[in-house]
Image (cartoon, rainbow, N blue to C red; front, side):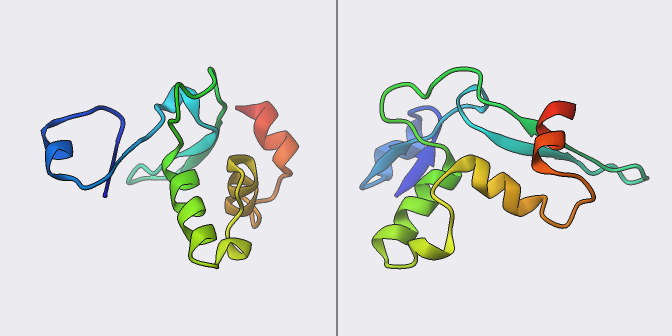
Length: 100
């Protein structure tokens, strides 16, 4: 199985090809981790709806966990995944979205 944003030469060797979304089609976060402080994290909002049957990498893995019987351990929504990632940060999800 392969996940790729574009059909490339590697896809010719895959038994199954799943189309992944681009950054414009998914809701996620982006972390800046320079060698020196300050470090930063930014909310990345969806600009356009996914084309065709494309899904973000996280949603593909979440769907697989659902099929394997462990879906209750992983959110099936991208925004819920971002909320989980920033749980320990000193601001709310709403403020995080507004500041980005």
